[in-house]
Image 1 (cartoon, rainbow, N blue to C red):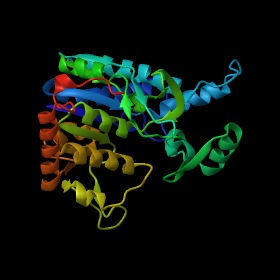
Image 2 (image 1 turned 90 degrees about the vertical axis):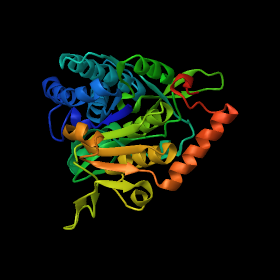
Image 3 (image 1 turned 180 degrees about the horizontal axis):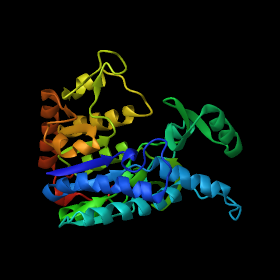
Image 4 (image 1 turned 60 degrees about the horizontal axis):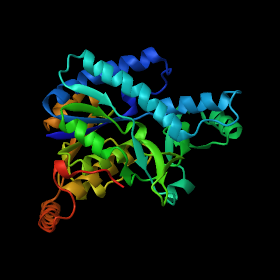
Length: 333
């Protein structure tokens, strides 16, 4: 069984906490302890968020008088992949895991004409009171939007259309490595007419990158781990109640906050609709129970969707078209 796990930013830093290395490392150790049993039993690919970390690096870069221009976002995302990947693979080894944790710097291909570049929505960095956020926006040329009771910087978040290192991720997972990849959604890049790659000022949503990886790697489960125990029905009302299992059509009829749960729900729904397999959302500490279906929210395909997916895969196999087996996966271009 192959699982792609999307690890929320709360695994590294909770709201209001200082971004000290010791604090983040403490959270990483907890995450590693939770993920190690899954890594031991299944093929596990881990993606992680980086919102607070990339925001901190962006602030430092903008404030550095030695720089003529701040470092671009794709470079800062790559830096956070190295830092977080280093911590996470080290702590997974420290659990006594027999497999080989590997962090792979990942580039995510986006469309330069994606409309997201004209409507920034992706939160990065710390949370602020509105007055402080207004001052920072004025000083740094930021776009800011409300995030719950706070305000945060937002940047462009285009759709992932490819993963440069997809074949390498597959090969590592196939050979018993625990792959940490797609950190922060991957460093956003575009490909020109000659196939050359270059970075762009954007951050791809980590949950959508996780979904893309899960689909392209033929994963059996997309596991979204966050700071809520389950998806809630009638959220924010006295009738709010956790949902144990729901099919994707019913889920699509519900509404969720665009800045928090919305992208996670969308990622899970996309995976289920494209693959006919299941996705799940829940709290990090419940990861093992979520995989077993005893905690969190499991999202399933309808019978009609499963039939459609089976028909498409069968047709592709007969025609020798789209890759359907692990061994046929190649680099996405």
